[in-house]
Image 1: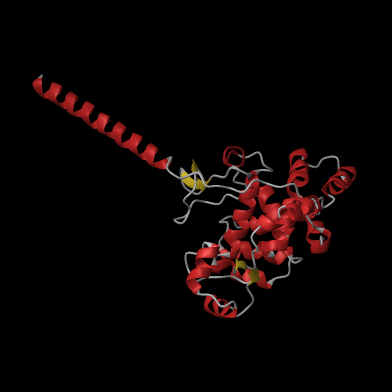
Image 2 (image 1 turned 90 degrees about the vertical axis):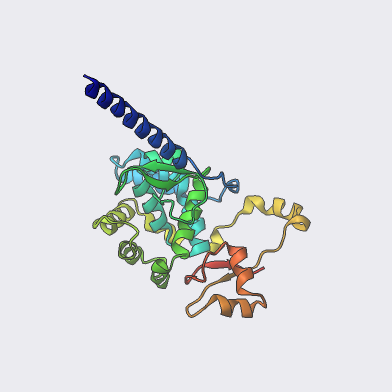
Length: 278
């Protein structure tokens, strides 16, 4: 009888210890600082409304959520294309696929439209979601625009994606296959899915938007008004054969200063990446 009571008490102690341990893990999972994200600005039209209307006329069975997604984020994808040299069609197709046209849990709860995981360098807020493994760590954003920009930086600042920037922004098929080759996704059908979305919704049309046709006209007056208070920022686009040391010498600065200005943790840079030099 005594032995049974002792065993019962030990069992209660073990259960209580496990419960306490689980609670500690949950607290740790909620760690992460709230990063200051730039407030989104209104972007000029890339004729996304006309594009969607044309699609609706050609096929009434198109996914209404995908069409709405194109209307909402096509201009943002074009903006990222002109800054980082990533095809707008690829960015848009990835956003549609990874976020379920903006309706997936990650997109709705954390504005993460590209399924980007935390990785060791991420200091911001995070959420946990089942993916390849249970309860994996994903980045959380205040704005969808930040998610798009972080996706661009994710590709341009990692050596394994550097070869992609040798492809033209009009060559969405090579980009789709290259993303899988570089390890962006584990799904073997990932390239086919991206290409299918692009061609079904004719997203390649947004790759043709010229930089001269995409200007923030609405903000010209505001820029002029605050001209004296706006610091001048110089950028340099990384070319084949460039190194941080060579760029530093070209602009009469140091590698340490360049890394600090651009938030770089290593000396790795990619072709097409835009670096702040001043």
